[in-house]
Length: 88
Image 1: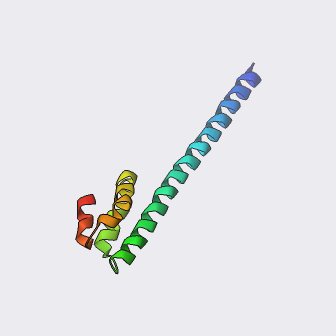
Image 2: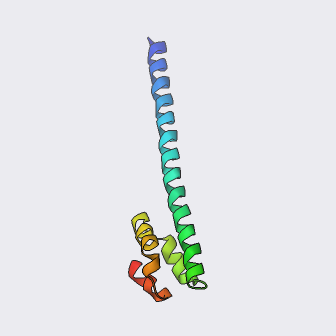
Image 3: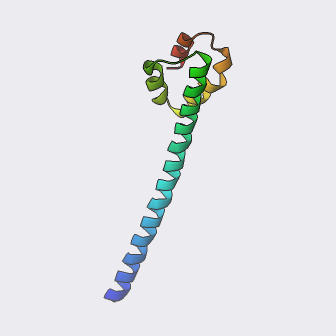
């Protein structure tokens, strides 16, 4: 009987570890996707405005993904670097 309980516990533990790994992979992909979008946007803004201060790059890196997407979509509407402030 102890052997069966041990096997069940071992299976549950193994399933939990697998589940945790899968969740970790998903979270890592999500974070990587956001980081990639953010760095591409910063590169584009630097080119558009002939540079970008650390203030803006730091603020942009801290934005949620939906704000990064909005700023990237509106990049051609920005006339000067200070126009970025409305997205921060």
